[in-house]
Image (cartoon, rainbow, N blue to C red):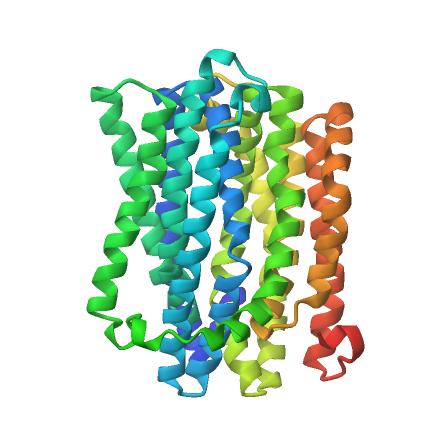
Length: 447
């Protein structure tokens, strides 16, 4: 196939990317199968209404990912730069320091959230029956504890990405998903379906596996980079947070732009509507996942190339990636044609899903994939100021706009707003990346 021509170069970055893309495709096929099995298994373990509540409350907890102050992204780029320069000692210093800082941040956040949870009425916030309030209190506590640990130990995943080993990184996440699926099926025979048991299965088990894998890998394969208290250097925090602060603002803005979607839908349309929206999103995210598999290896590759000022390689690679993106359109058409069959016979046997929702979500994913092409390249280069401005502007207007449009148009209000964000990001990303590759970026375009 012609789009595979991108991997014919003998450049070492391209060869690494080729290996990773192949492995990522294999991993993602497994991950998608697990994910598609996990949805009906979870709904069968509880029910569609409780699953909608789970999606809403767990999405609120995952907001914590935006409070690492961009440290993981800042670590990723700085680690990749240090490695590109051959300074392994500095790279190890970035890793060790990042672990300590993340531990301080998320253990503090965990304690604060556990305290605040005592005074929250989740039944009122989610607009559900008051009898669920005690259960939701317990679920939130479990999610906070598990997710805090996950955010600390998830630095291993970022470390592997910075080492240009995204396939290895993705496999760790897939292992956690597989263990969750096994747990759900096992508990369906021996335990009562409940949100508490769901929290242990879907969040607790993957965290435990991540912790174990982290210790094993740093004792064996990556012992040269193993974090050490002796290598902690808080002066490096400035380098990490310097770039990371921009990523943090982007992440915080994305919280308002995207993560309020489920909350708004459950408030206006009910818990089952969240389930419907999530199923359609998960199905058409195949487009986003597929492009992400191809784009992901090039983030750290662009960091390496930009550090070495190899613009010709970056330009050639970007042009080929752009041609690959065109395949999102026929992929979307195929997914749309088979969507009704997949919904009825695989994912949501008891739910009626409008074909117009599928069409809108498919188009949204095509736009998102294009925006991500620019974001992956620019994130690797480290010039993200304009990207930050776009997200900040939409963060100020998207939540009330989504709320208003959802009242009028239902799901389509949410999809319209998020698609507009993706489109604007793609436009400014296209302009900035082309200026950088032509070495004509100046002023705001060089930041």
